[in-house]
Length: 135
Image 1 (cartoon, one colour):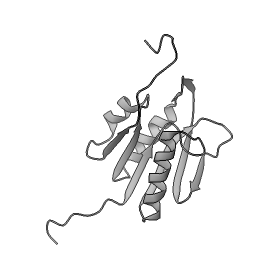
Image 2 (tube, rainbow, N blue to C red):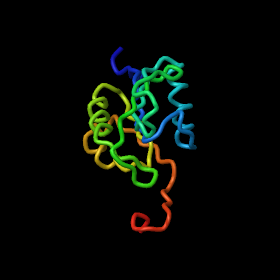
Image 3 (tube, one colour):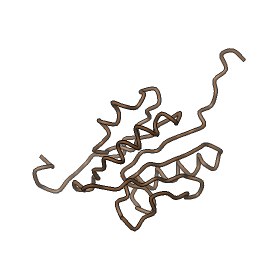
C-alpha cells in the first residue's frame, strides 16, 4: 500500500564491550539485542576483543557477535583500527546502527554512518581517576 511504513529488520549494535564482559551498559545492550533477535530481527554486535581468549566470531542467543582486536587501552576505553573499519563497513548493511555511549570512537564513527540510521544510546558520564585524561 502507498504510504505504508516498512518495519526495520536489521540492527547493528556498536560497543567497546559485550558479553561475557559484565557492566550496566553491556547488560542493557545484551538484553535488548537478545530480545530483538528473539522477535526475528537480524542482530549483530561489533565490539572489542578486549580479552584475546574470546572468540573473534560467535553467536550468543541469536545475536551475531564480532570482536575486533585491540591495539591499546586508555582507561576503560579500547583503541582499535579494525573496530573502526568493521563498524563503518557493516553499517551500510543494517537498517539501524545502535551505538553505546560513551565510546572513544563515537565522533569518528558518526562521520561515516548515515545519520538516519544512527541511534546513539548515552548511558553515563565518564569519571576517570585523577590524571592527565581526567582533566
